Each structure stands twice: as C-alpha cells, then as structure tokens.
Amino acid sequence: MASKHWHSLAKVSSHPLFFTSSLILISLIVFALGFFPYKAFLPGHASFTVDEASLAQQAPFDKIIFMVVDALRSDFVFSHRSGFRFTQQSGSAIPYTAHAGAPTITMPRIKAITTGSTPSFLDVILNFADGDKSSSLESQDTWLGQLMSKRDGRLVLYGDNTWLKLFPSTFARADGTSSFFVSDFTEVDLNVTRNVPAALDQNDWTGMILHYLGLDHIGHKSGPT
Image (cartoon, rainbow, N blue to C red; front, side, top):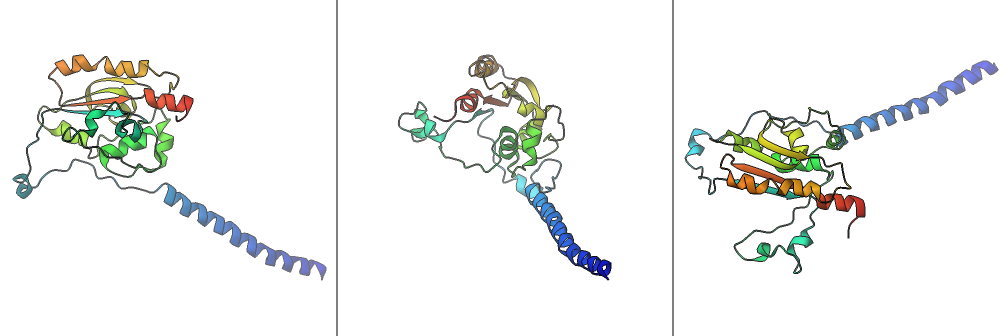
C-alpha cells in the first residue's frame, strides 16, 4: 500500500518537473531565434531596369575616398574646440551624428555601413575568428561591389584588415593592419598615412578606403576621456 502511494506521489511530482524543463527548453529556443535571427541574403548586385536607366544621374566625381577614424566621438569633430573646422563651414561638409545599435565592434559596423543591413550578434564571435571565411560579403550587394562593377572600377585599402576578411578579393592593392595590437597607438595609423601620398599620385583606382585604429586603441587601453 505504501509503495503504491509513493508511486502515485512520484507521478504527480514529475509533471511539474517535465513542464518546467519543457518551458526552459522553449525559452532557450525563442531566445536563440531572437538573438541570432536568420537573415536571407540575396546574391548579386542591384541594377537599374530599362525604364529607370534613363533617370539615373551621372556620378559627380571620378574618385571617392572613404575614411574611417575608429572610435572618433562626434564632439571631437563638432565642438568649438575641434580641429575639424571645415565641418562647421557652410558648403564644406554635411555633419551629422549616426547612432549605431549594438553590437558596436568592427566587423558588424563595417557590415552595416557597406550593406545597409542590421548586423547580427553572431558577428561578435566571427570578429575574433581569424580563419573565418563565412562572413565574406563579396557575393552580396554593397557599395564596394557597385563601385567595382563600374567601368575601370578598382579599390584600394589601407588600414584595418577586417575589410580584407569581409572582401578578400575586392581590393587591387591593400596594406592591412591588425586591430588586436591595442598597445600600438601610432604605427598602426602611420602605416595608413604613409601610403596616401603615393596612392593620390596614381590614377589606377576609383575608390580608396582608409581605416585608422589608433584612437580606438587608446580608448581600449586608457578608457574614455
């Protein structure tokens, strides 16, 4: 009689345990789907249709230089004590502050500014994987791909080698620097600047990307000031 009573109590107590375990499993699945969402990528590059081609405007410039100063705060540029006075002169520049959502490390941010899409938290892990090749953006529609698709489209890169991981065969010339030597404040930027004069004298490129890391390294080592 006692064994039957104990068996019935065990059956009753197992139901809440099973329900709790199932609820935890479902919660983990829902969290994973929300935190690491699947994003369908469409390969190839966007193009004008026959009707839209007549409305397309000609590019006002033959070359473009895209410069990134990693960790540059907006008040360094827009305050009255800034050395970037040209950003405050009418007609010289169009200043604005872009608010980036998490994650804010290098690879997700480059993906965002080249594709216009929202990066995933999975990119945080891939950012530190040197051998990763799955994060390449060469088959996706980016403004780098659009520049490359133009006649005589050639790109050069000097700076953070994360660009080379995302676009491994895009650049005609490149001199990448590692973003993980955070104790290097000067050489990592001088390695970018030393290539600029020679590149400006050459006429074999249509797009140049400069990515400076020194300020970001100072922030990692010394914290915000």
